Length: 382
Image 1: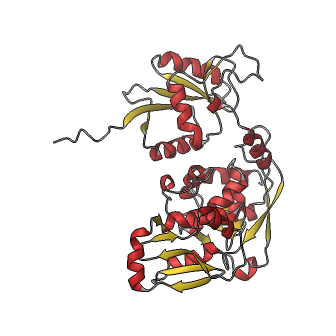
Image 2: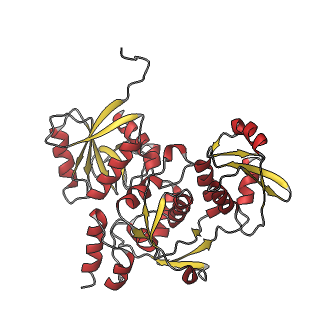
Image 3: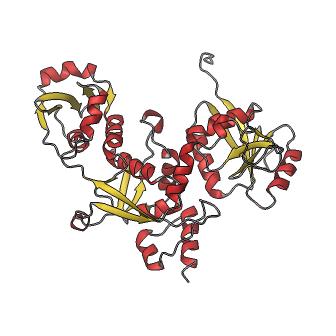
C-alpha cells in the first residue's frame, strides 16, 4: 500500500541552451543537492517540455538565441543568463551563480518575477528582483579577485581548541577539555558526539586563542554513560564549526600555496554550518586535484571563502593532500603570497604569465574542465 503521508517532490525540467560546461556542471551539482524541488536537466532531443530554459546571453548572438528559444518553447520561462543585463525585456538571471540565492531566483523567475525591462536606463535596477541585485559584497569580491599579490596568514593546529578536539576524536576515551580549571566541553569519540558545558559565544572566543595549554580529564565510564544521552552535537558538525571560528580567513597548516589537494568525500553541507561558495568549491575539488594558488586563479571566489573552506574540509577529514610538502619547508612560512591576474573582460577568463614548469608542479594529470584550462595556460607560454 502506498503511503500517502509522504510528501511528493515536484519535478521541474530545465533546459540549458548554449551554456558553457563550467556553468552546466555547477548547476547540475546544485540541482542534485537541492531537495525541495527536483530540478532535472534535460536535453533538446528528449521529448520533454521544459518549464525553465536558461539561455547563455554572453555570446555575440545572445539576444537572437534567446528570442529563437522563446519562439521554440512558448510555454516555458526562457531566462536570459548573463553577466550583464540584456538589451531586451526578458527574465534575467545574473552570472556568476550564487548558490545561496540561486533557487530563490529560479522560484521568482518561474512565478513571473525578475523581469528585466529593456526601456529602463542601464543604471536603473528596478527591473530586477531584490534577489537578483548585486549586493555590496560583490564589488568587494570582484576587487579582491582582480588584484595582484595577496598575502594570507597561516595558523597551526597545535595548542588550538580545534586541534585538541580533532586529536581527542581519534582516541577511545571520553574526555573533558578544561580551560583555566573549568570544563568547557566533553568529547565522546565512541558515539561521535560532543557535550557543551559553555555557551557558543564563549566557545567562539576560545577558538581565537592560538597558543593555549589546555587541560584534559578522562571521564569515568560510569559518569560517561549517563552523559551520553545529553550529548546532542555531532562530532563532525562540531569540528566543522570550530574550524570556521578558528580559521578566520587564515590558511591551515600543513597546506601551503603549492600543496595539491583533492576532495575525497563530499561534506553533507545541509547538516553543516554555512560556508559561502562551499558547493562551488566542492564541485570543483571533487573533480580534479589542484593547488591553492591555481584554485584561486581559476575560480571567481573570494580568497577568504577558499581558505575557510579548506580549513573546514581538512579538519573533518574530507580533504586529501595528494602532494604534501615537507614540514620543515613550510614551518617557516607564517604568511603566503598568492598572485592572481584576471582578464578585465570577464572574471571567469584566466590569463596569466605562469611558466609551464610551474604549472607542471601545481597540477598532475588534470581532467575535464581543469585539463582544458591548463591547456590554455600552457598554450600561452609556447
